Picture 1 (tube, rainbow, N blue to C red):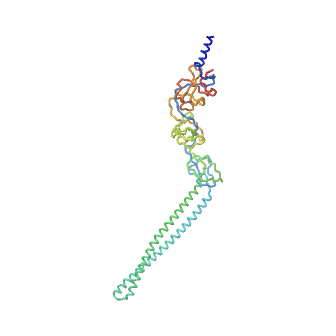
Picture 2 (cartoon, one colour):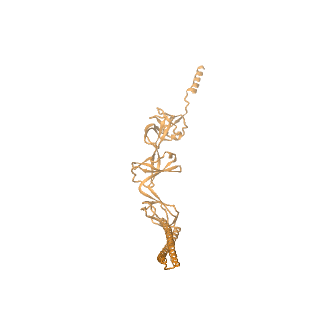
Picture 3 (cartoon, helix red, strand yellow):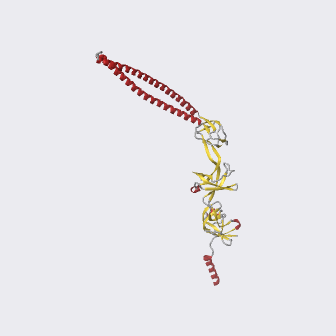
Length: 400
């Protein structure tokens, strides 16, 4: 009895202090994925889809609103710069042009009449000056002659004074006429200048209206392929309304949508690459669109060197957008375990390969193939990278 009691006590002590208390689970080794921890080349990147677009696209808008009267070119056609695309009509603009033109003709007619009247007045003043100058010459000679006669007592004082008054009167009349002519000349110059400015403004308005009417004929701003052009005769277009676009087909770019989580890490000049027809092609971000829609933003990427010859507008290409260069790192393959652990821990196989133990790790960067391991693992160790769904975060997995 004593021996039995001692053995029972030892068993209780074993259960309390020495027995492995870690939780465990028996799993089928054939249902999990095991990978080796490796020291290898790592590059952080994300996959993004880029859509092939022409390098240069110019949008064609209606400068003025109007009704579509005539269509010269259809969607998809190649156009030359300046070539007619369609013609609009705008009754309001046409009426305004006619009114301005009639007003300009009226102003021009008034100018010509005023100019003729001023010139006639000028000739009349010049004729009057000539007469006054002639009268002055006569009265001056008469005054000088009668002055001598008076001094010689040939004529009376009254006759002499009358000759003097006539001469002074002729002088005053000529002086007044000259001042009047100077004033009228300045007035004439001012009037003619003012009318000429009015005509110049009116002619400029007519030229502007002519240009506006010319803008009712929509022309190609550049040479290229017309696309997104769906206008029909009889439709009404508003001012500023987009009518289509012209794509220059001598080069391509890619436009990609990137998850908004990466907006702070995306920059101009950032590299990307893709494989096409057995070759690798490199690009860089040339423009970042700041608007975020649907949880993503857009970027334009230009080819750094050559462009694949077989690319077509609208084609989708999967790119690798790079966030780092290639460097040596401790890596493990991507797998479903990350969804359960968040990269904070992983199951590591022991040397025998018969079981795996839960171990804390720290994961850094990632790409579509690998996770970078910053601490917790050593090269050559084996880990379970498949999903941990159903494991219940047990401390140990024992393989069956």
